[in-house]
Image (cartoon, rainbow, N blue to C red; front, side, top):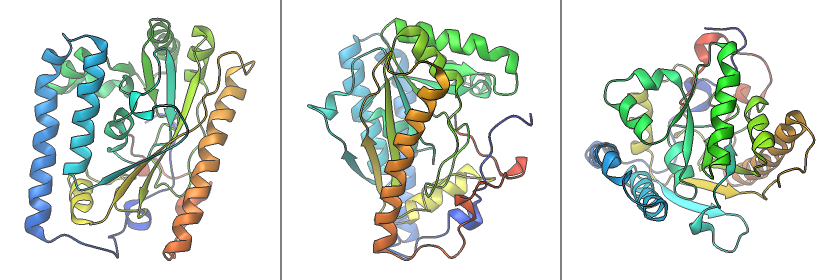
Length: 299
């Protein structure tokens, strides 16, 4: 593990406790889990076929599939944000950046903005799934090799210039949703080079906690905690587009996107806290670096 990689202080014990609200019984939760996993694998198997369709049909099918997956796992979906037609997504050639909480973030973003996701290079080596990810247009970053970063920026720039949406989680690590990490600057250089606008998006889950996939949380445990917790709502808040050329350098562009998401996150957390007691431990919302073992990066 390289020392420069981003980490978060969130841990499953502090930040992802069992929900005090509605809970599903083991049979209902098991049915949700089986249905959700089956939908995920069915979509993966159909990727080679869907890749043959035109972009418009591909996007519609992807939105329908990801929305179905989230609902099968037992979450409602709520969309916020101004725009003439949010369901139609954004035009091509847009860098979509969001905070990172859960493995659910990727399908949640895709319900509005199907596109090419930036993922860690380990996924490329996974049996079957790696090949499917490549076929689906996934872009890969070698997180532990700084010298490989310019190549990743070139790949993102090329995708943006070709008119693709590129989805990135610039924090580099998942947080519990009560606060967020710093957005890394490199991916914003690709948007500057390509003359592409940036679309900040806030992701959230209510109640906070059960959907978070943080620290050394095993995926199986996170899946079960999600399907057991009843009454979960997945939120996606579309924030104002940052036009191409509105910022002179990648640092100021990254700060603008991070600030937009942070402001929306703090507003949502304040609203959530007003309706239910906040957890007694809140270390996940401080800036103390966590040990390397606490990092959990989904992409």
